Image (tube, rainbow, N blue to C red; front, side, top):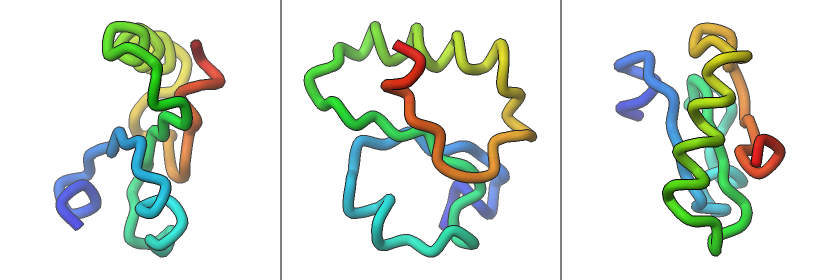
Length: 68
C-alpha cells in the first residue's frame, strides 16, 4: 500500500478498508466514522490531532471523530 511504502498516514471514511486491511499493511490511519462531518471540521480535527500525536507515533487507527 502506498501509505505504508511512503511512510504516510492515511485519512479515510471507508469502513471496509479499516475492517479488511491487516494492521501490518497500514502504517497509521485516521478514520472518520461520521460521513456527514464537513471537510473543514475534519481538517481542524486533523490539525488538532497533529499537535498532540506526532505522525511518527501513530501506528494504528486513530478515530478523528474523537477529536471533533
